[in-house]
Structure formats: structure tokens, C-alpha cells
Length: 148
Image 1: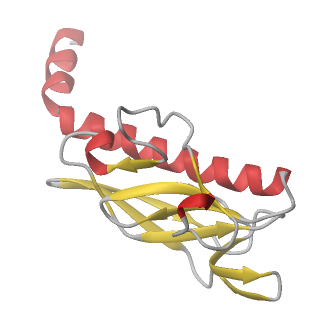
Image 2: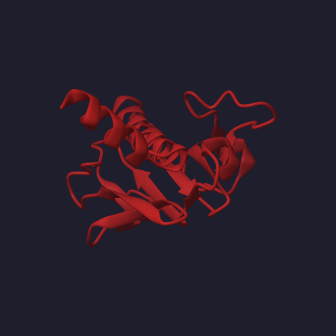
């Protein structure tokens, strides 16, 4: 019975599935990192932005300003700088576009200019990580900022 189970399990897991699971866990943990740092360093917001072909960690209110980009933990890829590309995540892995900010209490926002000018997350944010034929979703919950 165990030989049969090992044979079937070995055939059902592909390298694309492994890359997909790995990339999903990595992005989920990096979102949690941004939230934790924002809560620890109460002087600025932190977040993660994806342009579809790459994503990066940032601090302050302008995620597109290169001066605000921070090296992603575990992002020591050759030539990557502060941004992680889809090819760094694994063969065929793609990522949806998103921007999420976290404030000093870990609350998520879709836009953040100042503590009085911001757009809190109104509903669950779904971030899709895909490989051909399969995908995984990461969700960020409004108010609490739960990342799962």
C-alpha cells in the first residue's frame, strides 16, 4: 500500500506545483514581514507592491520612489537589487498587480498619503500567484490585516 501511495504522490506533484507553493509562501511571508516592521517602526508605513512582472518591499507613502525600496528578506538573487522578478520565483510563476500599505497598528490600506488621507482596504484583497494550469490566492483581510 505504501509503495502504491508513494508512486501516485510522486506523479501528482510537479516542479510547477512546487514552484507555485514556494512562491506563494514566500510572498505571504514577505507581506507579513512588511506588516510586522510597520508595527515595530511606528514612524512610517510599510508595504509591498507588485507591478505584475516584479514586486518589492517599500517604506513611506510612495512605493514607486526607488529611495523608498527596501531589500526583500530572502531576496538575494543575482542582479535583483531590491526587486524580485517573476523569474526569480520559479519557472512560469506569475503574480497579480497589487499594492498594500500597513500602518503602525498593522491595518492594511490600498492608498496611503498621510494618517488623515488614506484608503483603508474595503474588502479582502486577493493576490493571485499562478503557474500554467494552477494558481494560489493570498488574502489580506481588512481592519485586522490578517495575511493568509
